[in-house]
Image (cartoon, rainbow, N blue to C red; front, side, top):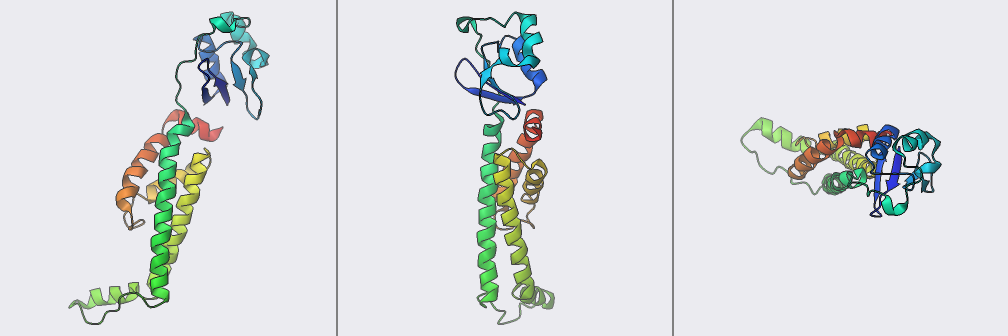
Length: 208
């Protein structure tokens, strides 16, 4: 994948070799355009990339003066696209961890509300007793692990890594039984994040 610096000074990409060749043919980039290739830390003009020499010769862009350079048209910045839902995942994860830690402490310290009298429904009494005891501790621990995984997914998503993990945690946090403490937040963020991750340019960025 490649990145370029447009005439406006902004960075565009990452894009594939074929996409960047298309930009050159559309005169959105030329031999003077600074670019960064796969695994590169420095920037250099496109004319110094052997893989773009045929395309630059095709459009006569090897020797185009900077004053004649056509500014690169605005291109979607994938990092900016995923930043919002990624931060949302981190916030949801933190809320899930905090709420489940509180529940865990409540069960361990005996702070959970005891059933002092029957609710009139034996089955409901049994459920409340289970949720206030060992089962409550187990659910709280699972919730903490889910929250940590959600935070990790958000961090990785911001780095354009772990595509499958990000997808999985977005979906899980949309399900009320998996995220009971803030499902109203998880649903819109999940929809937002899935919409962004399903875009072809975002998928390519994660695979680069």
